[in-house]
Image (cartoon, rainbow, N blue to C red; front, top):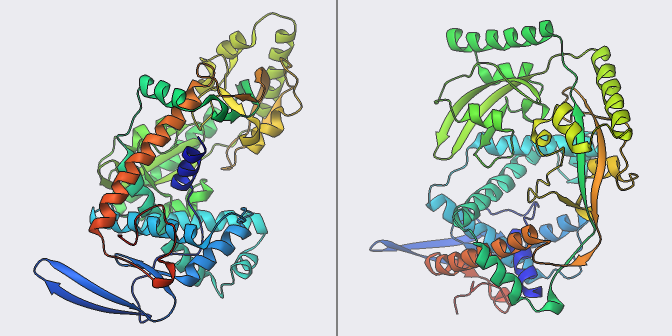
Amino acid sequence: MEKIRKNIGLLFVVIFTSAFGQEATNETLVTEVSVKDSVVAKRMKLDGIAAVIGDYVILDSDIEKTLVDLRNQGASTEDVTHCQLLGKLMEDRLYAHQAVQDSLLVSDDQVNATSDRQIQQLVQQVGSMEKVLKFYKKPDIESFRTELFEINKLRILSEKMQTEITKDVEVTPEEVRQFFYRIPEEERPIFGAELEIAQIVKQPKAPEAEVQKIIDRLKRIKQDVEENGSSFRIKAVLNTRDEPSRANGGFYTVTRQTPFVKEFKDVAFSLREGEISEPFETQYGYHIIMVEKIRGREVDLRHILMIPEIPDSAMKEAAKELDSIRNQLLDGKYTFAEAAQNFSDEKETRNDGGVLRNPIDFGSRFELTKMDPTLYNQIRDLKDNEISRPLREDDPRGGAPKFKIMKITNRYDEHKADFAQDYLKIQELALREKQYKAIKEWMDEHIEDTYIHVDAENRDCDFANNWVKE
């Protein structure tokens, strides 16, 4: 079991660092001799080259930067070795190299959108752009953006390739059973304390006149772009309330698996290239979408989000209504599940008796040590079967707040894995093991087919993969 855990950890940990692959520069002497359809590349180390994977060069300094960045992020590096870091960097570059060979391309807009979101998050965390630049020892924002672009492009290519490798990997119930009973009983995993949580939500409503005003504004933008050739990107920068995408003109790349609400994805995948949707509603507000590019299962799009203003009176009314529902629950007039089905505005949980679903495995349990901090703070003082007073939850995107009452419906103490009780978690472990095997087979095959050079100083590393091709 310990080996499985280590393999899964190495496979799925993504290191967000300043170490990134570089094209061969004047630090690398490259001589290419064409022989029929193949190219034999002889590469000589001049200054600190740890390894070469296809067109990617890994410098010794990249490994050191990775280690420093892991420490800066608060990760424990006590058991992390130079060879392990080099092996992980080589894996990432092999994925990225093969992604390019297989035409799994990444648009610059997608990479820039990711970088912009990261910069916004960093600024929010430390307080200013100047502090961010000082922390990362960058002279200006452009040099920081350039480095982030290279990091994110390689990371996204690597993730695309891994997704492509594992997209068709599934496990049957019988495979899950065999996986579990292969683990000796004394080595079966321990699962931490878990909770099941239910909630009833009231979403304050904007007046109809305010909603119509927002819809009319979105229609005018759509008309201006379609009839006058105005830039949708600029319109998004000026108008959208979706702060994470504002700087990039509302840009996202989405697939059916992207964790956006269903209504948004349904509209996105119903449009042709260049088409702009009619205004539509999600839980976040009102949107229009313009599709820029369709690449198989991926769609590059821009969107504008507008949020109707909600008066204080509507928010007070929502809280008051929840307080009334709570009193009826305490009086035994309804069960919590019945009240959720009858009164909750949150359709994702309403028909399930208000039960929250864990976004990690879509099960009903939340492990305390892995719970989202906001959710934990909402329920940490609740006793079993106690019903909270109305709580206000603000929308991080700047939308209207919602109000809710919550209840802990079940509590599970820390325990050794049980096949029936913990089936979903065991299924996930079995799937990851099967994905790991698929990736290992892919890795072995493509190491043989790719130009790889490991510097003499690193050839004695006990790599998980056959990088030195012995």
